[in-house]
Length: 257
Length: 257
Image (tube, rainbow over all chains, first blue to last red; front, side):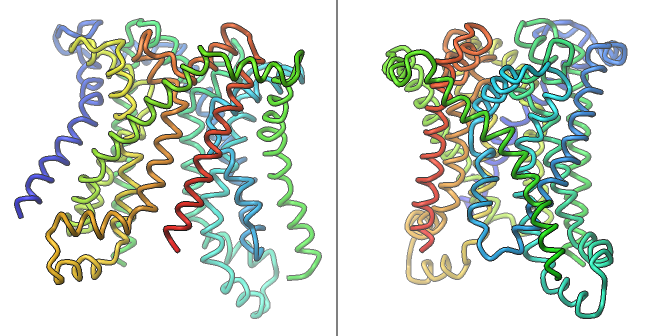
């Protein structure tokens, strides 16, 4: 009983450690002072500045377009392979093949891809970033989708064929609905990986194309006041909290059924 | 399924393999050749025996070990609490979400907040700041796999130990931890690999102490344009990563058996 109480306080302390920087960001985003350390009254002006900061807004649009495209492309590509290899008896080779990009450090992937682009004479920008993000995202999609394909579908699919369904019908009416949770998970993971990516983007982008992490890096690392970034981070924290809350509610509701 | 379907499936399944080969494997092969340029294998010898590079690799390894050990020690009691003391499904979910949400916020922003907090305590640009920053980043990454193995441990096993007269701590150290070793090892491998090649935390929090192997490779490519040394070092950390994962798979498989 006593151990339980001690551990409860311990877990609370650990959460305190994890949330202190987030709280700091949130408080700072309403702080009238431009630099941390002093409090100059409550203000919303950083949020207004954020709304008119062309560099951040542009970076957001850039990041979103790369992330959405990369998520869709890699989920389709990874899905093809996951589907095919989930039907094979032995897929150990394919598993390791797709596992490597997840295991190899991102900085290695990034510098080597930069060299390939350089020797191929490709101009760096939107497309090179998209291709670079998709290179590892295909693997995340494969890993997210393959177990799903393996477990849920084989018998049901055979049953559908036995009952006379055509391949197209089987795909649209049987396969797709069953694979939907896995597809959503894959889209979410690959989107998040791309949207948050810093290192690969830094190495594969050209001067004209910035994503959010690149802007954050160039401002924060040079010690420039990042008041608008605090406002932006606060918005992102709130979105993450709401999304996780809704997601966990959904999961719980499904389990209770 | 008809054979025509299977062969078209195979064609589609090769598409992702071609893509990953072109954007991931080919660049790494290219990188190995880049290292051979000019003096051939001699350039490998020169870089690998360079005492400056070796000490930076050793330094990064030491940081990674400290971070891995610290996150393991910090995460295990919390994982224990979550798995064995939180009884309601909803309560468990709430705590898991609470530990996951900080991971969803971009690390550059959190690192910036940490930078400001550390400067209040006079810790900015120190070794401690790097280690604390990485512990902050990777704590949830250690907690989740350890928790999920604890969750899967047969409760009867622990009850049996208790019935046979084991004290609580004896049950933890002689039964629970040995049984959960595969999951603990997966957390350890993950955190070690990520922190060994980490770039953001050392670069933003470490000042002069931040010169780790990730930073070195970054500089060799983007600042000094020494692609050859950069390629060889990138191959070294690739080899370390593959070895670590291989060791984990061998050892983990033995433990499972």
